[in-house]
Length: 350
Image 1 (cartoon, one colour):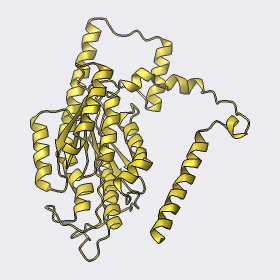
Image 2 (cartoon, one colour; image 1 turned 90 degrees about the vertical axis):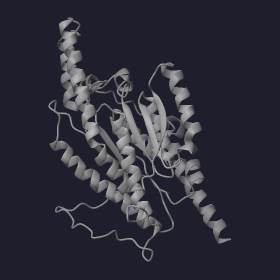
Image 3 (cartoon, rainbow, N blue to C red; image 1 turned 135 degrees about the vertical axis):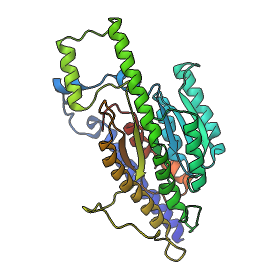
């Protein structure tokens, strides 16, 4: 009886949330309110805004690596988003055979949208982030193939109710959500910088060839003013091969200290004090702190063109403790999918 009442209360609260979101999207005239006149954009904002073609062509010709754990729900949604906007995606997770049909569907949609010869699409890779040797092997094979790396997205979001040790010498959830992605990002950081250097040289070569062929687009006063506004707003169109290096990771809010904290001698989890939410929370807070530190280092290591690796952290969403079909039914992963997709595909720098 108590379980039934708890389920009813959960559904009732979810209906209230859905009702509030529905009202937010209903125009005021249908809610009995007076229609407010739309706000007209100023000339400076409209001049600095990018065109639809400049936005949708940003990831065309670029490659993204999306990593996930046992549950690749968010990773698959992000891979679908990036593939739809023109990127070629590698989805590496623990059980890739479960997502083969979804990957085939993405490839069919990409061929239908951009043609059969397009490099856009999704391929699967086998990667267990909780095993150190597999992380090293995956990174070595990725570098050996000389595959470009423009985007690295950490969508590892596992949640374990039981304490389990692994090859990292720690707990399974912490290793999958943080240690494995952190190690992989460090191993592939040089590959990302090498991709940015290669693209910068290719861009300079294309610019020289256009100048020699006198095919440079004429820029009048209006075009130069629009370019200046875009530079001021950080919204320059950067199609391939403009240098691009980005890392996006799931994380949770945490307190930062003015002084760096003292390193832990060992992970604070054992069979006696482990909790599912504690392991999940600490792993994502560690992602936030490590990405913050990596962002500070990336600003100090720039290419000659001034570009550097851009770092972003996205909240992993709520209700992670719910069963996976229930979370999919309520669309809990949509927030993380849309936010990661926006941060990965926006031409805005930062």
